[in-house]
Image 1: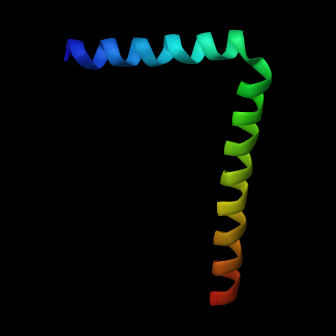
Image 2: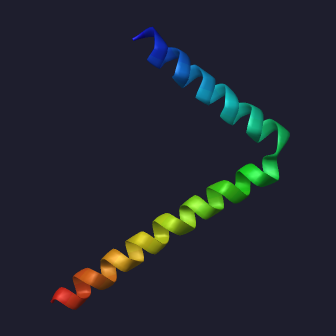
Length: 52
């Protein structure tokens, strides 16, 4: 269990470091992730609509 805690803390530290050092890159990454989620939701809505 301690290894999982250390990996979680290391990942959080990496994200914080990335956001501090490259805020534009971090914002772009979040934008790409949000666009991907929106695309999946749109595709799912189209699929369900076509079923009816």
